Length: 156
Image 1 (spheres, rainbow, N blue to C red):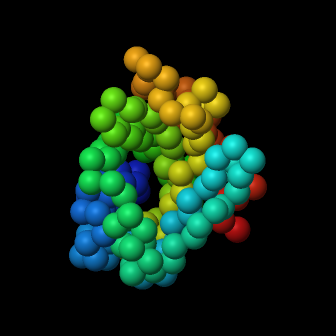
Image 2: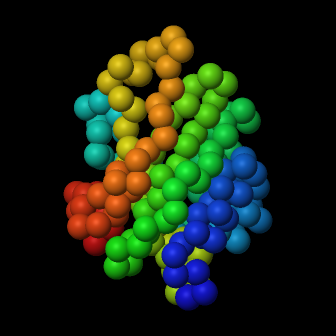
């Protein structure tokens, strides 16, 4: 594997998000049988709501994103065994939030599994509060999420 930290794999994932469903960036970022999991909010927190397997499904899911959504990597990936984790930011107009990407890499360094486990804070469920955005996460949050933190929805 030429990308042990996972940074290049996550940068390719950002290219996928910015391509809004184009197949070539998906093929460059993901192994052919890769899976992306989308989780729910509120009563569905921690549960996989949708799962997309393979290049075509992943590209179709990415095509659903509004064109004004901007994702960025905002931490150095942390590796724990087979899993990498890194904080990301997402912006749409005045709305800003952060989350954690957790991923596994295929032998060739492409992504084989990815999910976004962070939920929106309760106060944001009915929309972004006036004048608010979530601040950047602390390095301790990244480290805690990547080291010894088993989720019930982690791949087996």
